[in-house]
Image 1 (cartoon, helix red, strand yellow):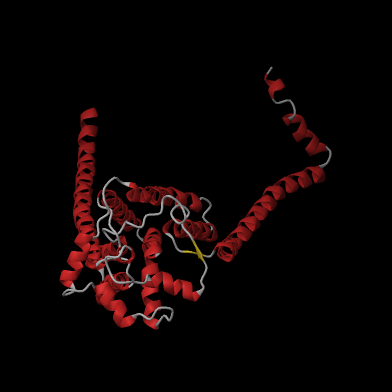
Image 2 (cartoon, rainbow, N blue to C red):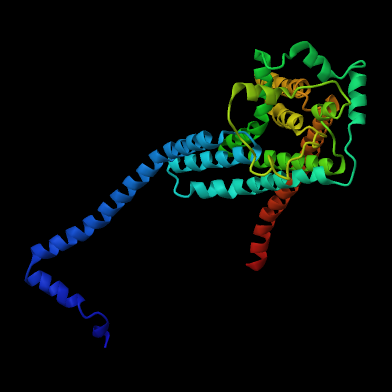
Length: 358
């Protein structure tokens, strides 16, 4: 009965020994070469995919910009950033590196999209839109005149941007990608710092959203349109229009009911640079600290000069950033200490339990 389970093995050995050793050797050689050839083919295909990753990414980005304009809103920048990380993962040769990108970044991307969708609801709340408290504060710190009006009177020439207008526009536009690029660098080098910065970013973003709902507020340019300030120009919009640079609008906000012009308090444009400054300050060297100071100040100037925010919006944004980084950071540190203590206790209890069981 057992011979019926393996009927061909003894006969194959005998026939090979008696009849045709050359034929058997050729068969063994061919079966040995086929897996090797298949492995070489797979390696060649993988190598082609690695070298094609970046060209395909940049070609797709080029076609998108040609058809839609430069992506500068949070949601679009985030999509292309994740695409770049996936291209980098494929190029590095790690078989499942792109899955790690999706695992770590899709939750962040989802939160950004949820914020983009929810942000517009701040413009549809039953509460009145505020402008008088901000205007009164700015007149107090401006010695009777709002700083936006004063700066534009001194510096701005409508229709004829100066070099500092382009610089202010560049600083303003950095809001849409600077945090994400820094997150990507930390994700590559310091994953623990990446998760911490993501926590700060999400907490600060949704704290801002909650305030937009509870306290809808006009920015200076809209306050001027409503007749409460002299005529003001949105410098960034004017400079970009003069440059002729095509821009791709947000997937959710521009031209839709999710657009929100009364989300000025606090200024997240000001809050994010301050968050980065407080986040990196403890470990930064002297040169980096200079940059960490200059970036929030440059952003604050660009926002006030460009009529995007009152001074009080910026100060409240800085306050939110400080509360999030220092308060949430302290809570995360305490939680990490408790986790480490529990892990150490578990390690110490393990030998005792082994002795008891023995």
